[in-house]
Length: 267
Image 1 (cartoon, rainbow, N blue to C red):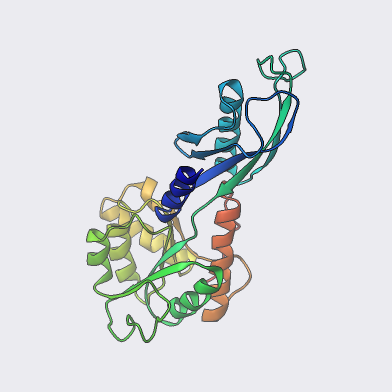
Image 2: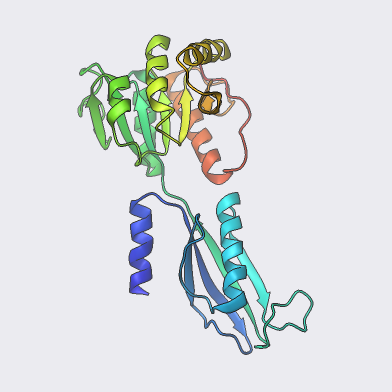
């Protein structure tokens, strides 16, 4: 079990989602005893065991579905081939397996240390989220202004996005004051960053940005990932309200990863 705990910690530190499958109830003769645990990652890799054979395959399938949908739960399995829906087993007993989804906590990459960036950075720690802030202006990217950030980087954002290791971030938000700069950042960011990408602004701004990105040869498969406007549709106007709306949007992507939230109104 110690090795399995180390593996879960390793996956958590690498921000990789995984499902923990644990035998929580048994009846009769079963191969997996109470507390037997298996960890499954999105690529189907399994570590540990809940009993082997056909049961293991069924539990792995349930874990992968839970990772896809974001919804875990308790699954019941009969290990008796003569029962309706029973596994091809002659053990005769049954097991209940808890499937618990562990998704890494967000690490927000914020481009722009103005009012909205500051408000969102202030909210993030209350949700146990990490924040990294990038802004070319040193007066906006510093520890005094962003004391809770993992890092406050004073550097040209587009140039930084071209070279930085982006593997640690889950969401990127463009919260700056210049659409021209947004185009530069997105052109550098989109081909390299597979996570959520949002930009503050209107639908008209999005249309203009998309047009400029296409002129630069950015494929539609990347452009279509941009969310603009950002935030849950609550009519947010002030920086603090926009930060709340964006936080709600992030919670939505975590709780319902296969669903697209209604169009936002934050500009």
